[in-house]
Length: 142
Image (cartoon, rainbow, N blue to C red; front, side, top):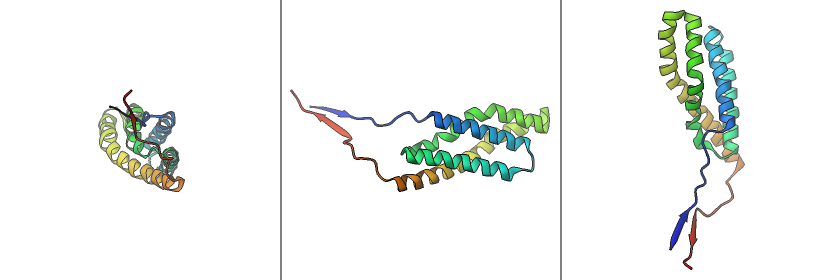
């Protein structure tokens, strides 16, 4: 008897997630360069993340919310460090940028996971269940 387990998982990183990460990189760099105008950046980031949550919830890819901040960090790391050096000066910008791209990223990604995951779960609950497919295919002997 042969038991063939079907894999339904697709790749976690989609083009939409990369576009979201680029948009978030622009928002994060503009937040760093525009000192004192954090409300606008928070609103822009919240809307962009909510849109990603809607997409992931609609596509039933709620688990990808954990991967999204990592993609964002990979794209935003260098530009955010450069923005810190532009705002704070070369030497102090190196230190501030290091703290910003490490500790700040951990805090930001926790918030992103919660927010994107919440929106994705709400959208997924409104969309309903996927059509049931058998998860195990049994091929009888010949």
